[in-house]
Length: 90
Image (tube, rainbow, N blue to C red; front, side, top):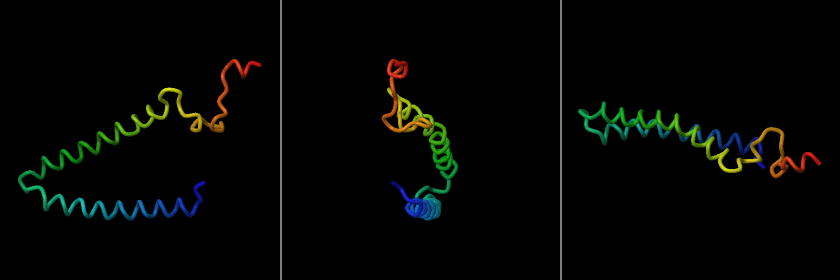
């Protein structure tokens, strides 16, 4: 089971690494892409980012609720506690 301290450590590490990535991303972009292609490059980067924000949660929801669903994610139920309708009527 995940403890509070483990969760805080992961959140801190993810935040720190995201800051380092954003700084490195901007620096690498200007050193790789020629100045006359900045607009095209930024369009591709931000377009793919927008698509990931749109499609990521949608695909995650479909995968979670796919065939059979995920019983552990249903509110108020223990994993494996799903009963068939016939069992609940008896």
